[in-house]
Image (cartoon, rainbow over all chains, first blue to last red):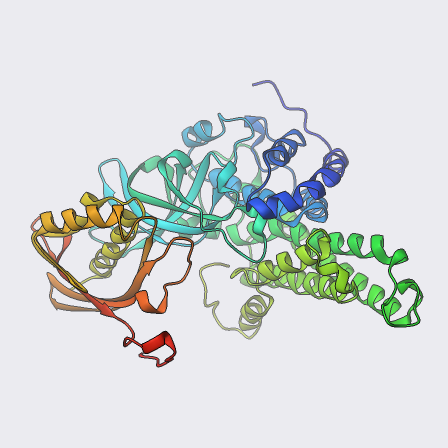
Length: 393
Length: 144
């Protein structure tokens, strides 16, 4: 394969910035149809979004985490569901890079391959000749409609030892798709359920989950980069924060665009811009977005720095990664809620973006690995010298 | 002495029911039972794997068409190393639903036995509505 010309950070950001009008114009369609529009997927592919965590030896860009944050932010500014799906693809794509080289060659033989996935061990696996047999059902599979592969998690039950979770790669054609994505938020993500019935998976497409969570996997040659040796959760958290920050920036755009022409109904304010309450709201929300960005950058910088210096991840750093993504969610949600409350009764019409962004950020806020309360509690436990009460750190 | 592997293998029976149901696969569903296994549902008695399969084949085209089933273990008691009683909570999910309707919620008993080949299969399955029938559906009594 000819060497890839890897676009610079600024080139990538410029390309996705050009997509914002397209993403915004399709956001309503995505909600109505509970999935992304094919044109959006094509545009993301053209902009190189599906190459960001693809290894260089397969023509990918393998960018640093800071670039992921910036691209995710710009996409999120356009459409939360689009950015969510893009960032979800980045995570299982990284997970696919944990598998042996021959598996990677198969998966990445598809240009701009899209891999959806999960961290929930809601399948059971039994060993058999040459692999495992799986029965399971996985919910919340964002981006499944446009994926070629899914990464699944199941509990493997060996005959002579304790059960343990494994991660496996499955072609979408091996799975039954159940369209149960009827939700109040992130509606455009098409996060449907998938089912595997007596599905044989060859051994090379199965890895023990704990080693991947610890960043101790050594199956692949990892010819490209240290990023593939980092622990999963900080990598996943850092992949997601841009999307969340972008939603808040999208709410800010939507608010300031309507500001000059909005009055405050049944008051003397002919323009909302003249009212001191608006000044306070504008400052308060904008400062919260700055604060959210601080946590997003701190997390991305930590992941990138650890990859460069190769030092071992401390427990506190891993817990802080969860805390940082939680704080990005909290601050983005607070900012969005301020903009929403300042947007008037007319903002509840479906065509006004702020109402969609409010529902989207609420859905993010409830995500089990992102909830600000859960994540702060986990960080606090570790700060207090207790063991984490989760494998997902 | 039952191991964690035994517990997981028994719990896997519920997963097998969920997945064969999703596929509308009556043969797969019945394969969870031993040859002379029995299944008792409200108004239904199937004596043997063949009857289970015949009943489910018809139900997947009728009453259960488009539905999903959910179930999770409530408790698991090993009577001997090779015989277990699993109790579960669950029910049929109507099309488009993500939670079991109150009227569809059940508790089930699963009597399973380890076979000569080491596989765990169902000897008898039976379920009962989780909540007492209510007139007009207005009662909100909670059974544990």
